[in-house]
Image (cartoon, rainbow, N blue to C red; front, side, top):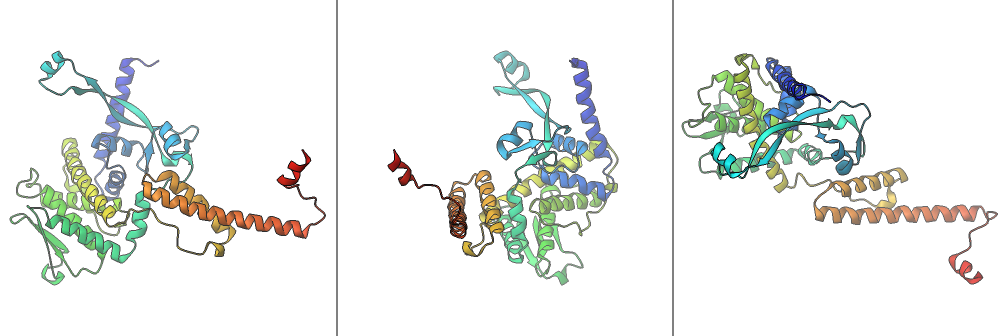
Length: 374
């Protein structure tokens, strides 16, 4: 049994390891890896993102040992090494403790424990699908990217302290867009033919508006620092919806001072705005119907091969198990019933044909015949 000192030292080592990894983020390749982790785990605290990245930069989806079994019907592979994340220990405060801490809160965080989690690559079982799979599929379509861009632009124009407008690219001196702090206005090249780049530019300039506006605490950051932050937020936002922007330069983090506090501050700022953008984008993609689970294609089940019919049956079973939307679940069940009936009809037909082709094989008595014997 490890002593308290051993446990404390082990926890300190985890945090130190994460900090060392963060300090290595001085080239765009490493920075992209970190931002990919941020896009995948934006709902985690900055501390836990650092911990996940430090222990397994390739992690894509994590859960506890039991959660993999109960929620996903998957099991953790034997010998898999866990990833440790920090979970707060919350205690109910006594009146005396509230007075000592000068708070009216009934509960407070009194410490942290480090829980084991595992990446999906360390598990085996049923396939894991998420809304992002469907979003990526839908956003491959030109019109859907344009719809998301327009929806995000309209949302921002509804805010009282921000305005988004479009101008011809020819008037931007080679830029794709810009943010004007004095008027709190985002200007986008409206005739940009690459819709993914246009959406990314809007994310980029929105990040500037949130991080580097006149009222922002970070408005005096150096220009290179600001551009790196804004591009990082845009990259995370695009990764979140499954659109690859790896061919767009992220710039370099070498402009940042190699100071632990400065780097952590910069990454924390990126995370805050990235989380906000991701939440907005997720809400808009749901409104646009881009996060609806894919429906089975409308086709004549009779024309499907046995292999495709069985594949469709398995896919629908997984979708029923994984969706939390009652309406979608009901729709999938109806589709599953239709597929099941078609499989049953084919099986009965095959059995009948086999029986007719093999008259020498004794057929089982019908239930009516069996009942007459009693």
